[in-house]
Image: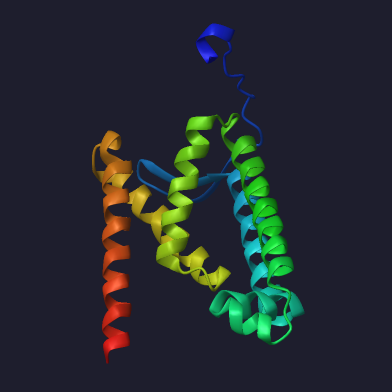
Length: 184
C-alpha cells in the first residue's frame, strides 16, 4: 500500500540540539542536548505525578483494588468497567505524550519505530512491574542503560535481539521466582 501510494517519511529538523557539557577530559566530553534534558525532565515529572496520584487518589486505590482482584473490588462497590476505561484513557494519554516527545527528539516516528517502542515498553513494564509507576520507570531506566552499554561495546545490529532475549529471560526468572514464593 505504501509503495503503491508513493508515500515517504517527512523528517523534522533537529530541535534544541545544542549540547550541554557536563564533564570533559582529554579527548572526550560528556554531553546531553537541551531536548534530551527537557525530555528527561518531562518524563520524570510525569512518572512522579502518576506515582503520587496512584498512591493518594481515590482512582489509584480503585485501580490497585481492580488490579489485585476485579471480582472482590466489584463486590466492594467499585465500578470495575469505569476503572478499566479510565486506566486505558490514562495509558493512551501517556503513550501519546511519549510519542510526541520521541517525535520531537528524533524528528519522525513511523509505524516500525512505534512497533519497536511498543514491544520494548511491553517487556520493560512486565519486568519492572505493572503495579507501580516508579518500579516500571526503574525497569525502563535499567533497560535504557543496558541498551546504551550494548551500543557502546557490541555490534549495534544485534542490540535489539540480545536485549529482547535478556528481557524474556528476566520474565522467565521472575515468573519462576513468583512460582517458588507461592509454593513456600
